[in-house]
Length: 327
Image 1 (cartoon, one colour):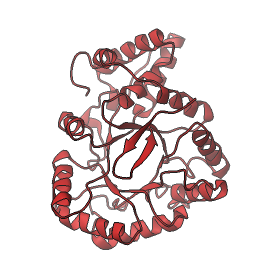
Image 2 (tube, one colour):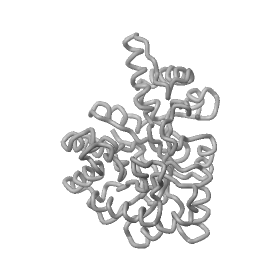
Image 3 (tube, helix red, strand yellow):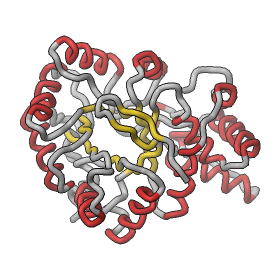
Image 4 (tube, one colour):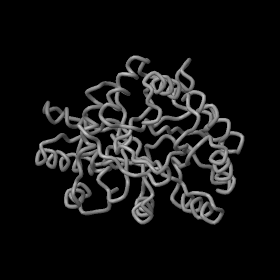
């Protein structure tokens, strides 16, 4: 298997289109389990693990556990230079999600802590995990630019930012001699979401305006929750078993049943699996788009990695979209 890669101009490197999600690394998975999955991912050509300062903070005794495990893994394997080291900071404390942590001191403290835990001298791509619209973009990009100047990070991006704020930030950066945001992360999958059932009001779901922005600017886009919390894998298992399946309220749209059925047809035509078609729906875009995937077992990761070799054509994407925009 040879994973496709796409260029991230902001860091000048090719990134594998399937990105290993780090939420369960060192948290739900112990060190041995985490290392086995990370080895499998790297051996398949993967070179980015999507982690964050906050991953593990909800588990007693697991504060910052994902970064710690990934840092230990890279050191033990001696593969720091091959990996794109990336993490996120600036997330609110979990006990006070309504209070942002995006002042200059917060941004720098989180970045310095991540460097120690990841056991590296520089972070290739540093994401602001949340936004605070009450803070001017200049007060966010200034501290990030200082981290670049000080050699602590090579580039920066955003996660859970609205399109207008991304545009404001990039315009401000251009007018002040800073590089633009290198990439953006948003909630995106083949499955449609019901906004009424999104529990965290600080997350940002990809919408048409954001998709058009990426298509027009060619800013790289990373899709988190790209597997829709295992929705299509569960629907596939039910279909094979001939049993009824009731989707959770978040993904209960009838359109998701139609999209699953269409993905299943395309999978049969291509002699592959429905899940791989669902992920290739993301990574087959004309601009650089990446799917962040989670896994608890080797078989789950291998299934997702298979999507990294598939490129859907425009006609297939249109079939999945039901002749409408990709959302």
